[in-house]
Image (cartoon, rainbow, N blue to C red; front, side, top):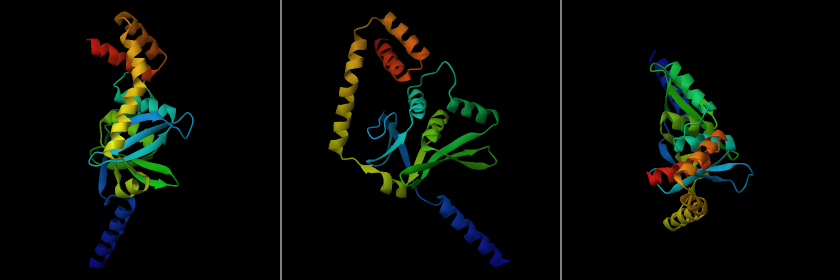
Length: 215
């Protein structure tokens, strides 16, 4: 009987180690989205350590980038997006998310899990990191990875490089924001409505920020 118990214990231990349950997790935060220079029509989602200076860039598609951006900017689309439907569906059946875990990197491809619970049972759902993060943002849950992923796919950013990144971003965003500053408030309101109707959420966010600045 004791031999059977020990056998079961070590079997579960090996299983947990294999799935990463016993691996120390590293909390991540979203630092930004930018057009991918390596793949046309794609975007680079840049994640960073909450307690560290390493960056984890992940190439994602345009639709997923849009889904992440509008949730970060807290823009409500005219029609619910796929990731919004996932949240509504999960909530209807009393499921909620616990965390997003980027747990594997194979041949340059990242793999993630959506960890959710019904209160009685915890389930891990395989997903692309882009979809997992877009859904996780809607539930307000943390994003994690592990040291193996950060060592293999992460980039160390020095303080000087980080300062240069901020300066470059400000220079890139300056022209459209300067143009918006010259427009009357009524025209901005019209432009915001048009941007939302066209589902141009990046432009809508810029207009909304300018309107909020004046209030």
